[in-house]
Image (cartoon, rainbow, N blue to C red):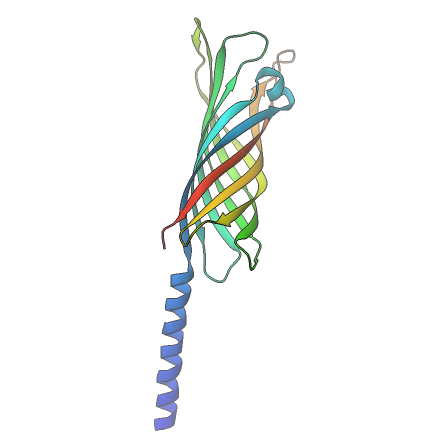
Length: 191
């Protein structure tokens, strides 16, 4: 009877200790990034290559290669066709992240999810259009490289599809708009 209690206490202590280790290994990080954003397809016919800025928050649960990343971004594109003005695009995405297990400082990952995109066109001397909010999806790949105990440099490329994000000039039908941002940034661990 005493042996059973000792075993029970030992098992309980082992479970509590392993839960505390798992909790301590859960990674939470924040990051900032920026880079180029290239519109493609019909979106690329109307807009030139622009710039992108990004704010990221990532949670990597302990003992799992799959995490969650939330992004906020601001993109700005110049208008094509000799028109002075810009298209600004702000939004956010919620993504699943699969980080490949490696034994090195460089860790590749796949990322993808859904997002909300708000765009507005401004033409110099004529003003701005009303902003419109659309849904979309994104997928891509990147890698983190550790640069110290609590920081990592990241680089990633993604493909965004913004549903009904552009209106065709000839048919006046809404089409999916596509863009590819290439981002480099720094991620800080909060652990």
